[in-house]
Amino acid sequence: MLSKLEKELLVAVWDKLMPVAEDIGADALLRMFTTFPKTKTYFSHLDISPRSDHLLSHGRKIVAALAEGARNISALTTTLAPLSRFHAYQLRIHPTNFKLLSHCILVSLACYMKDDFTPAAHAAMDKFLSAFSAVLSEKYR
Image (cartoon, rainbow, N blue to C red):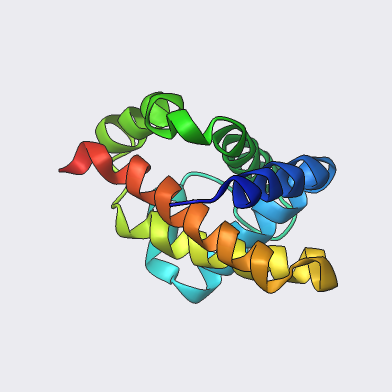
């Protein structure tokens, strides 16, 4: 699926973005909530206004999970198994939301990375986010 060069690119991108992880994650979440309002139902108990502590905290967790997944991409299913179980059995997040968030993450990355978000980086990230979403959705099958 991903070439060796794409895997290395993913790790480099996520490592570079970790200092602004909460900003990117919060931006992607806010984009998702704004563009797809039904996704807010899972967050009704949290303050999801722009730059809220809840949004920044959850955004940081999402980006940290993505960075960890990129570093362990050959064992993505194993790496994400706890998250997959948690989202399926406890939170009961509809799997479609993972795809929606992936799209919003791509947009946020393009905004943050600007010229560094090359076609190669975009393609690698899109493949990775698709795989990430598929693994998180595995427990629903």
